[in-house]
Length: 88
Image: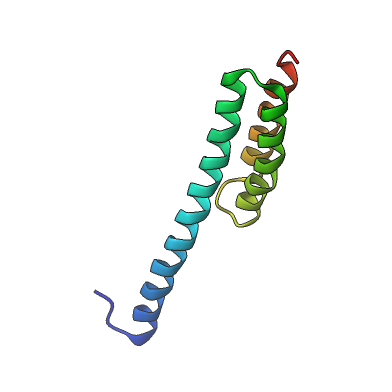
């Protein structure tokens, strides 16, 4: 257990940051799932819209060090490739 006041404050900050990070991570995964579902349904226009909504969320997660920036770029790139491969 934290003994000093600074350690107690650090624990409070960690709890707060964890809550924020969890919310951001959940939001990112939700948008990723929406794109995946749109791709699975085969609807190209729906998939493009979902990808356009998901891209800033994914990049934001990278900006906030939730995921590595290369991982974010890779996910967006691979999703875009799959969306473009869909038949109209």
